[in-house]
Length: 62
Length: 200
Image 1 (cartoon, rainbow over the protein chains, first blue to last red):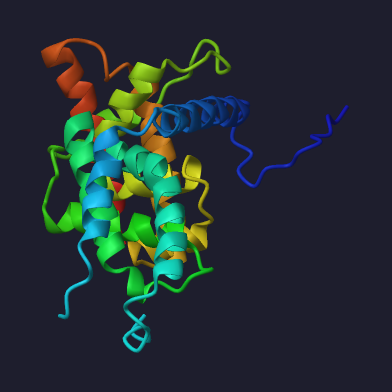
Image 2: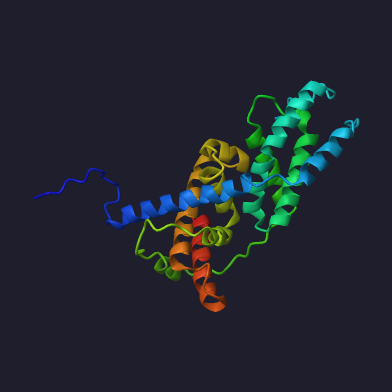
């Protein structure tokens, strides 16, 4: 009896490859979450103040 | 990149469009900076510097092209030029590094955010930035390559090394255990990653 693998992988090492893939997915989800957490923080006023100040300065001739 | 010289410097409408788009990118710049610097205050300083640099260089930006990638590149250059690097390099121990890649009890178990943050900080910077750009920043390999000013293949291999190393770090628990025990696991992972990145 030959068990057909629906997803043939180039390295037929072990079932731990699938585990590794699942693990990677879990890490990937968290990674995006970590990044988005900062993206979703309110932008500190300082940023806009700095930009406003820079905006007020007309570009110098250099 | 050098075709921007002739553009009018004083164009309020264009400036306003640029400013609006730049402001919209601030959250992303902050997030990217945070992954490079670790320390939130230093990261915000870096993000602010990058934002200002981008503003000052607005005449050289081609409106309609990828401003996110452009500002990320500025931020990254800023980071490297000021050598705000706070990571440590450790000695190489290949065997120990390979031993740390063990089976996990539950591969689907959620990864703790804090552990991930610490694990990420242990990666060599060029792997970390590649992984963040592609895995979290939403950039294609090609865009990440442009940001990092390297070949697409280089980005791909950095991302896959980063994933492997990060997995090893998380599975070995190198991020939590205190001082000495953690140090060993940590340095072996770092060494592994370092060896990989030096192998041609």
